[in-house]
Image 1 (cartoon, helix red, strand yellow):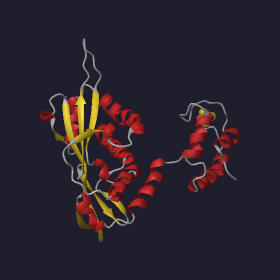
Image 2 (tube, helix red, strand yellow):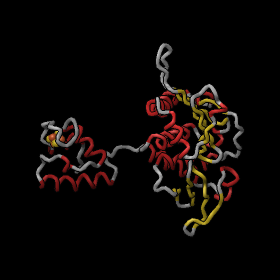
Image 3 (cartoon, rainbow, N blue to C red):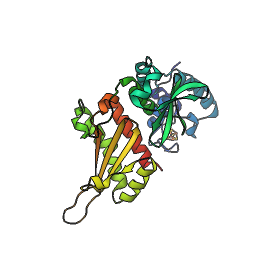
Image 4 (tube, helix red, strand yellow):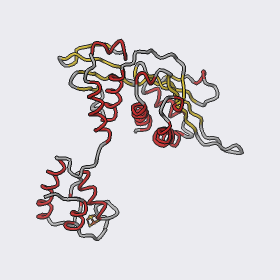
Length: 273
Ligand code: SF4
């Protein structure tokens, strides 16, 4: 027996849309129960017997991925791992930086990652700061697989000058630039403090037209330059503005999707409490 969101809505829920579960409607709740393994018991208006009966079925179908919400990063991770599978660990220090060390009894590449390290082994990638998110592992595996050897030249270019970025520009604006602009407008000092805490260098004196210029080194061969202009009030009103520049060699080290994932990590580090 399988339970779709419609089955849950039609056969199990009271259909009163009372919102006691925190969802706007019973149907929205049903979708979450089926696709995200949300506990049926969060609806206080279902009998214990029904919860027991249907939770079992829902748990089993979720473990098999039936009607489960797709995690694009998880799928990309499978692909990225396959891409990196044939890479020789011993080649990596020369290509992407880091050093070979012993990590819990196995050979690993200890790679600087923002202000900490990740350990790349044949069994996975591990962080000093806890479990890595799927999307982080995606860009790390793609970095390993990309095969680039070039050192950064110090010549920075905007995203749209990288090849095949046209379809990704909106995504960069929406998911990377806007959240930073909204979070740090009138908070330049806070942006600077947070950036320095994750290992950035303040290069503002080299970029006098910006209110803040920050050089991040998320990975040894992948520098990222963030320029920030604060909002201006008065006659010449201007919203806050972010520009992100990349070393011209970045596509030797990361594909475009991975560049966006890496920036997403940067935004998370800067904006999370
Ligand atoms: S608490 Fe139950 S009845 Fe109320 S909206 Fe949520 S699912 Fe529907």
